[in-house]
Amino acid sequence: MKKQLLKLSAVALLAVGTSNIVHGQAADGQMNIVTTAVPFLRVPPDARAGGMAEMGIATTPDAASSFFNQAKLPFSTQKSGLAVTYTPWLRDITKDVSLIALSGFYQLDEEQTLSMGLRYFNLGSIDFVDFAGNSLGGSRPREFAIDFGYSRKVGNKNALGIALRYINSNLANGAVVNGVNYKAGNAVAADLTFFHNGLDDAGNGITYGVALSNLGSKINYTDNALTRDYIPANFGIGFAYHKAIDEENKIMIGVEMNKLLVPTPPVATQDPTADSAALADYRNQGVFGSWLKSFGDAPGGFSEEFKEIIWSVGAEYAYNNQFFARAGYHYENKMKGNRSYVTAGLGIRYNVFELNFSYIVPSGQGVTRNPLSNTIRFGLTFNLDEAGK
Image (cartoon, rainbow, N blue to C red; front, side, top):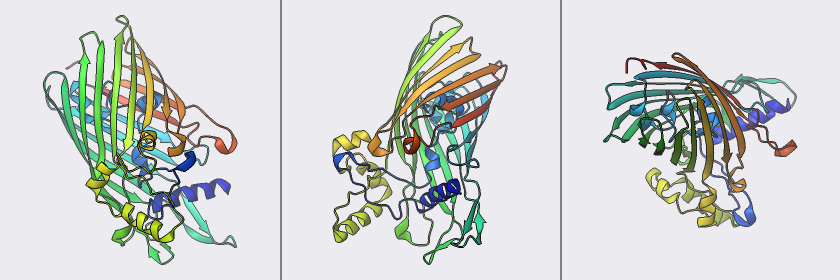
């Protein structure tokens, strides 16, 4: 029952998004978390990236690159590929929440690539009861996003990518709360990406990339246009160093920085009039303006803005391009959510098949235990037409 209540609370927060956001208090190191609707778009749906602390912007291209940086795909050694990943989510809280992802790409020629991605977030089933324990019916909240991308080389070492995305969030469709009718939310967004491939024929060198993701409309769960919520627009930069020790042994070490392009919530002043005006200003910002303002609107100034950056450091060791070992550390400031954890992963490749596994190492104890602990991702990749290319 306790876990059901926890999951119900989580779904309620997802359904409300930032509609009834409580003002954060940035002073004295207290939490002031930047929140958005459809946060499942921030969950990296790839087992390989999961083993490297969710890095994916500057790593070598694979069939899941459409979720991180489409611009990597023209440099793939495969002409086409397909990947499917299953992620049981929040296993310390519930057993029936999961994320399923499908992605793929096809190279039109040596310069151009088409890609697609599908994410389906299953929040399980929730039974509602009254104070007497009588059933009030149930709900099966679901969310999904589907996108299509195009990428092209610009010169021999650089490439650009673009993707268009449709988002559907059906969390409380048909529910009536305090006289408000809730419906499924819909939004559209785009990704703009860049990738530099500085590797030589032996696989030595540096790669880096930039990704602007989820640049799109707000999403609304009611008919009230004033309750629209921000989606997780994001700015990311990644760097990776590649070293071929010999023909059989290779390593990659990388770092990645991500920052939400979403306004920081206002700080409570205990003045109802001022707080109401600040909240209205926060919610009514235009989408484009909010992206720009997100770089300098934190109540704590530059120091707080810097705390909103999420860091990932990861490494991958490859033996004979068949066996892979991965590890990483994901860091988020305590004031901004404290999603900090260690990751590990393994991979094995045989012919066109590649099986990947990643794991978030448990951290914290009791009430401080990280809810992402014991999160596992399983991924199966089909690397197609390598011999032909």
